[in-house]
Amino acid sequence: MWSSEKKLFPVLVNEPPHPETGIIVVIPSFNEPDITQTLESLYSCTPTRCHTEVLVIINAPQGSTFEIVENNLLTIKNINEWEKSKSFLPFTLHIADLGTPPFKKWGVGMARKAGMDEALSRFLNIRHDDGVIVSLDADCTVKENYLVVIESELLNIKNRKGCSIYFEHPLEGTDFPAEYYQAAAHYELHLRYYYQALRYTGYPWVFHTVGSCMAVKASAYMMAGGMNRRQAGEDFYFIQKLLSAGGYFNLNKTAVYPSPRASQRVPFGTGATIHRIIENGEKTLLTYNPAAFDDLKTLFSKISESARQNISDLYSLFPILPPPLQEFISPDEWHNKIAEIKFNTSSAETFLKRFFGWFNMFRVIKFLNYVHNKNIYSKLPPDVAALTLLEKLELKNYPTDLKGLVRYFRKLEYAE
Image 1 (cartoon, rainbow, N blue to C red):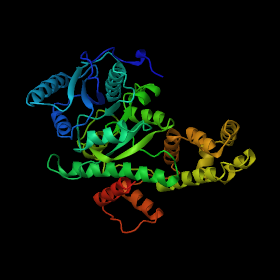
Image 2: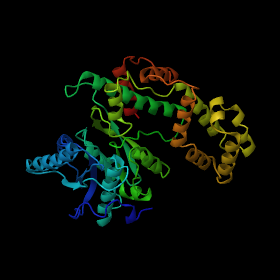
Image 3: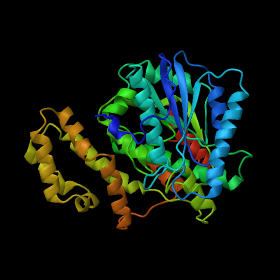
Image 4: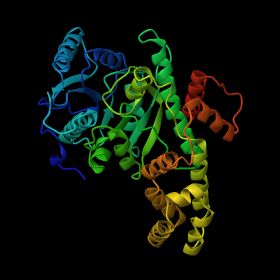
């Protein structure tokens, strides 16, 4: 649940919210003097029927260089000049300058939390518990229907609580050297391959967890306890808390376009991957071996088929699980967890929900890392892994080149 004590800052915006505010877009901004490209993209969006706010969170960790601090001041100046250049804005724009907050391990995750917490408070002030908090980044642009689709598909549908928003990295262009677009293609194929591989296993909650591509209703944000205080990876952990409550979905009717630039701000993500490939000389990133997903598929299919069986039959599944899973899960852990789940559920549906609450995304990733760190399986380039998965899915007439595969996997998701 929520309490004001969870907030990092008491109030970031003194101006009261418009009573008909339905969407608040939160944009963390650290060393982003070119953020006006993002604002221009939002300005070009089809206007919403509800009132919309955009909240930019200017921030930097303690110990930041003089250049970064100056760039943050330049960011504020550029935003103000951009706003003055417009005779009318289709949204209310707020800037919250946090300076260098006195928190250890400050990063984009805590900046995102500060902004989303403030958005929640603003919705609570107007008693609009189902207002939508949108998470975007300062190096992204969006499709023209971005805001109205969020309004129609999330804000205006009562039983929907949050969503992962479809994204596409630019695969070519003139803003960056060609190798940057190539690196972005490698990273996006890794993400989309992982998504389809997880669907292949039969796992029930398959979503991208990208901080710049998600939205959540204020009520769901509050019930989840708000964004966590992680320095990075906050998006993944936050979305996992939302899934079990239901109402979370993939929003594929619009798009976010993350920049293919290099960055060292966080240890993973688009910018970090491109930095490793371009700046550190890595030829490509590596992704999980499809064979590991075969193991998970076996586990999930057997547990689904046996959900109505008695506890002794469920115990007997363990010896016929793939050896990597028998190594990852001890017999005692399997017996104890199966007994706990079985004794606390009365139907196959609730058994499976509770089982996947245990063998959740955290455990899936822990298993995948385990089998690769133990050299049970070797990681593969994304295109090699993707082609192997397509064969397993028995799909035909797909391309074999990197960017062709990215576009093909996009279509697989977009068609959902």
